[in-house]
Image 1 (spheres, rainbow, N blue to C red):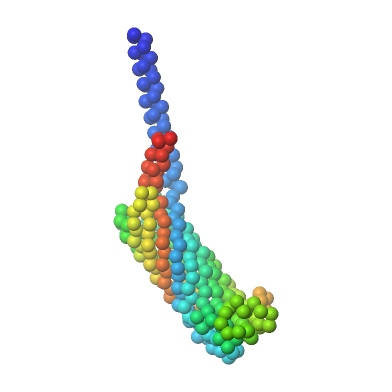
Image 2 (tube, rainbow, N blue to C red; image 1 turned 90 degrees about the vertical axis):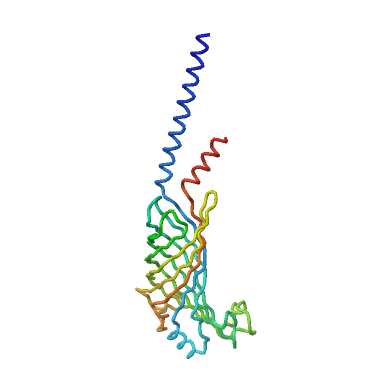
Length: 258
């Protein structure tokens, strides 16, 4: 009987020790998990309000229609932050476009403007970390590619698909730039079991420096006025943020269930 009691005590002590080691391992893993930081994913839309006056004047002299000053498009972004830190780093890809005549061919002519950019932003959260309303002033720098397409002698009268016809006179212009950016992002969050979902509105000003010359078909330098260097913008985003504590608690609950 005494041997049985001793054996049961030893087994109980071993089980408690094993459980404690497992919890210590989970806590240690959580510390490594936190140190990796938090990655967020966001998608949204952006509108740049360009000054195309000089460029449009030159297009008009060539018998081509003006490009609308509002260039709208999409943004895909990733944001990283250390747990408890107010500093965030965001990297994004953006594609904006603007057409003449609301995207319609008029009198056999059309003009299309495209703006592609990779941005990196340093953001600072001035709101309380415990609140779901966040305010981020930020600055950023990027690399941009601007493209202008012009079409003449487009058959028919209404579809950009017809610009693929052989008889259409096409010109393709490109230039590169370094966009600098400063702005303010206001974001409102909503808590879920694992994630926080933030809906944001952002405004600011972008200024392009170190602009290259317009190049026709990639190699012929042409004297075509560029859009004004500075432009205000608006941005709307939906961001998915992982909460380390809640996601780790969900992981441990699942691990114990298995």
